[in-house]
Image (cartoon, rainbow, N blue to C red; front, side):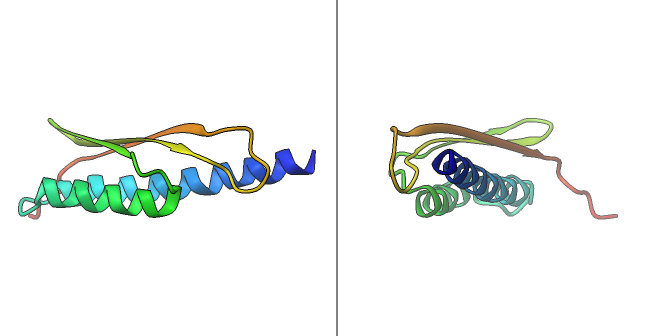
Length: 98
């Protein structure tokens, strides 16, 4: 029971950290001077460092709002029962300076 609680808390920490990274990428992509390729690549590097998955998928969609989604497999530390697929996404609207 204790192992399940600890593994669940690790999942929450990794998911919240990756959500913060994706939120930051979405906000960065709303700037007029944003370089989407560089931001997506930096986001992929950060997510790889947090999750340990070398094959992180990051998607960027720009319409009325900028949306960023990331999917990755995360292997929990300790006794493991396999990997967990996590999906996080965020969107941000451009801010117009008055």
